Amino acid sequence: MAGQVTDSNFEAEVLNCEQPVLVDFWAPWCGPCRAIAPIIEELAQEYAGQVKIVKMNVDENPSTPSKYGIRAIPTLILFKSGQVVEQITGAVSKSSLKQMISEKAL
Image (tube, rainbow, N blue to C red; front, top):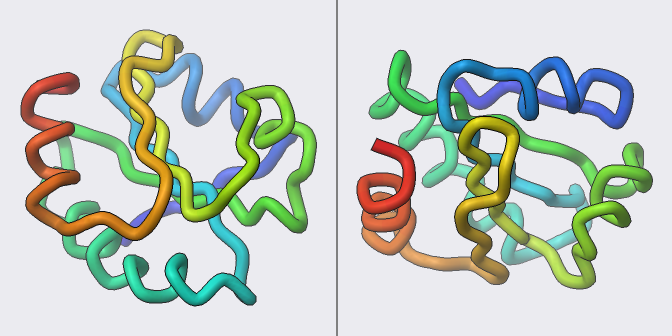
């Protein structure tokens, strides 16, 4: 299951993580966010132990999305060694996300 991160634990959970981390920036009122939520959960199970997958509610945590210039949701950012290596905005297919993970994280 995808974990939840907040502004207060983002650095520890994402930037300082040994594994690559995929962060799903979302909000409960966002239709496309809800549409890809099951895909995010499937990926969290499939990549358990290889890639950490977490979600951040942009309404409850405005600081981090602002820092990364997020203007539309869902936005998915892949971090590796604390650095942004890829970013996708919008509801994308599971195959697109798997391709991004395999090319940039593994």
